[in-house]
Length: 175
Image 1 (cartoon, helix red, strand yellow):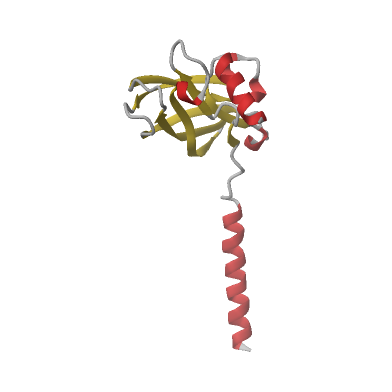
Image 2 (tube, helix red, strand yellow; image 1 turned 120 degrees about the vertical axis):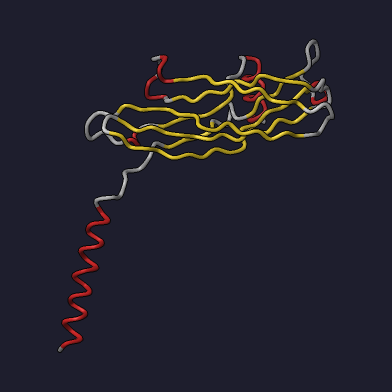
C-alpha cells in the first residue's frame, strides 16, 4: 500500500512540474529563408561577357542562424549570416562591397518591410581561392498585434542584385 502512495505522490509532483513547464513554452519564431534567386551574386569583369571566363568573383549566402526574443509589443530576431566569396578566372582581387537584404514580404510595398545592409569583402587575387566572412548581430523587429502569432511572418535573406544579375540567376536556375 505504501508503494502506491509513493507512486501517486511522484505522479502528482511530475504532473505539477510538467504543467509548470507548459507555461514557459514559447510560440514559434518567424520562418527565415534564403531566397534561391538572390542567394548568389555573380560579378563579371567590366566590359566582358557573361561566360565563366568573365567571372571576376562570386558571393553566396552559405548559412544563417539566429534567435528570436518575444517582447510585449512584438518579436526581435537577431541573426548571423555566413557568406563565401570566391575569385573567378577574371579576378582582379581587392575589396568588394556586397549588399544584402532582410525582407518581410507581409509589409510589401511599405519600405519598413526591407532593409539593405552592406559588408566589405576581400576578393582573393588568385582564381579559385575563397574567403569566408560572417555578419553578426543583424537585428529585425516585427511589431505584433495582440494574439498575432510571430510564425505568421516570413523573413527572407538575399543579395541586393542589379536587374542583370537577377536575370542571370534566374536563367541559371531555369536550366
